[in-house]
Length: 110
Image (tube, rainbow, N blue to C red; front, side, top):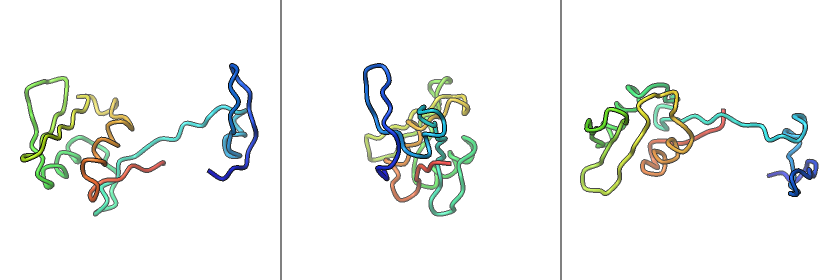
């Protein structure tokens, strides 16, 4: 946070809007997030790609619930649960993967 911008009063709340956001009339600009496989530098663009990388890290896929992609790592309590539709793969899911695989994934603004 650079500390430069404008103060906006909206719905009884005052907040600092960064200069880059001020051009949008004070509305926060939604930045898209991307899950990046750190060793290769590749953005994850499909579940097939993600599954391949997770398997290489020791994660196993569960097939019990067709509405979810689920992965478990042997010897841990960790479980990764993702929506079956990749279009619903959100920043929350990306951070879950990155936190459980700190050396292999990062979440970046694109």
